[in-house]
Length: 137
Image (cartoon, rainbow, N blue to C red):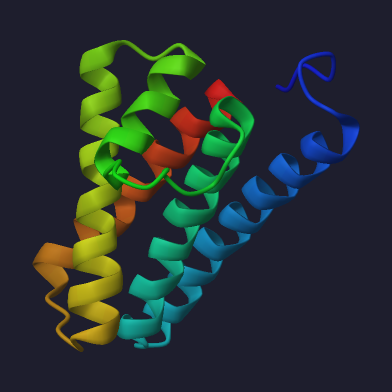
């Protein structure tokens, strides 16, 4: 998964910890959905995307937030490309990040708008995003 020779031992631990937290958040979102807590379920799904993205960007770019003047979309796409994803796939994955942030975190959690037909497929898409990030770590 991670090449220790590329990163300092402490950085490897941080990346692995971030990704483990992402997986736990994603698991928790389904428990919350079953309990009918749709807003917190969406927030947990977003947390999974955010934490996995932090693991990816820390691993490949050495930071968890974009430099000033760089959009999140550009920042996330560049991490995927540096990790070895083709440019087109990197753009699609970065677009998923932006959509999850806007729809799960903004619209559902903060806006308190949950539409099962709209949000559940997006939540399910997080699994694919996490799998791709994991493969690139």
